[in-house]
Length: 169
Image (cartoon, rainbow, N blue to C red; front, side, top):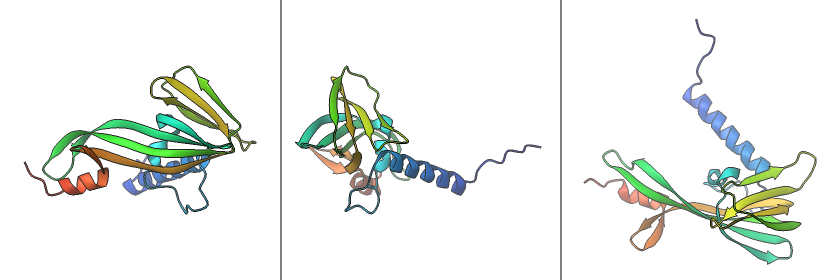
């Protein structure tokens, strides 16, 4: 007789939501105008920060422009299975910036938080050319979203799925 009982679906979903909330509150702060994190904030796990660029907005604020794509393969409705690219775009703000250092390129990204310090260190690759380390007091998710190329323009992933809802080959 086994003492291990596998978790129910509801227990597993609750655990995953708790893990996500812990990751977000540990690494990111909420802007004054935000009541909760953006819908797709899970896309900004510390190891998933791939930047297209970063801009200094003023003396102590830097915007990191996030951009990367991943492949999706699966059912988009009851009848159709597809393989397509999903483009992730968004931005993260670093406020209370103390230092910015360019480092040799590394494909790994990370956010370091220290238990007895309000300082956070975010390290991320930029365009497969270099990595950047920013030491700051607060990191905010400004916006993040998933997009799909439709013809010559980008549409949200939700719009794409809605278009495909009734599609049959």
